[in-house]
Length: 117
Image (cartoon, rainbow, N blue to C red; front, top):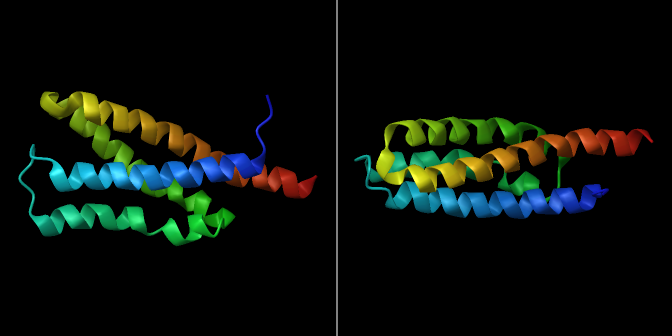
């Protein structure tokens, strides 16, 4: 089964926007840790940085968005380990973030292959 680059880019874009919504809800409504509202909003800011580049389908934005996702993936793994009360939701978010991380990393690779052929 061959997936075109256009389909992969669009699925990564929509998946990232869904992840922004899910993680924003996570950080703004979680009651496990008593963070201030300013600190909760600061957790969301790095998620918003690549949105313009993803919307414009700029390939180099896909390349560095994986680094942003790795921050949240490590945080979610830590939450899975330390907070049993929210373990299921954190695990689902971690799995979704991992799948999105792998897909976003492949976009520049497939784009370079398509340009060189």
